[in-house]
Image 1: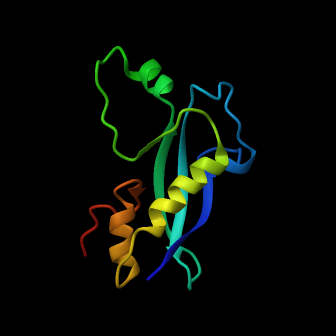
Image 2: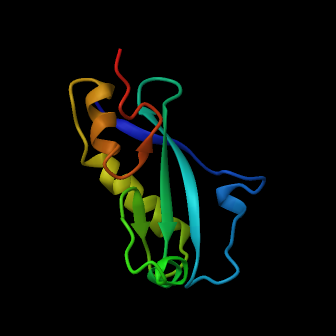
Length: 118
């Protein structure tokens, strides 16, 4: 089973392909990435915080610590690098069915079905 990125969006009025931060070396944005089987329509949603070390420091230095789950840390804003890193991780995930693959992808992105129990 192979999964692919179907779409990447921001959670506001500006699309990811149109977004550019005010400061390329200090930003934090939440991406909603739709990932699904390469042979089917649609997919599941995963949220990933893409940010720089400077942004982490500016947001959390007063607390002294921050958890890093569901984060992609980059050193400057580069859309192609961000997409490439996410794609490279997804390419390494395999499983017999999409549910297995999605559980592996949820290690880097907050999955809409995380902790779901039927």
